[in-house]
Amino acid sequence: MRKPVVGETIYSLNIGNSFSASRGETQELTPMIVEKVGRKYFTLGGMQFHLDNWREKTEYCQNHELYETEQEWINKKESDNIFSFLRNKFDYCRGATNLSLEQLRGIKSIIEGE
Image (tube, rainbow, N blue to C red; front, side):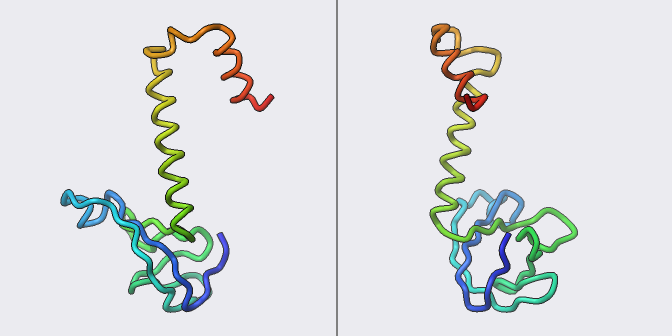
């Protein structure tokens, strides 16, 4: 991950381990301003994050996940949805039994990168 700059806007998502998310609140992407950048950590909304991987500095589970842009978060949600769809489709071949051999070969070649 790149090194953030003081004054830059970074987007924070409250994830499942946070107090608010665990109380049934929806996850929200919140724009936050980088307050301080040090040698090992940077500060955002009073919380410290590691410079090398942007993970929250905590002894327990992290409460926030950071994104450089809103589009990065939108892309991750779409990717997760597609992966979930494919996993459900091919898990124990429940929904894949109606695919033809040609369709299966096409899927295999895409996955293998041919």
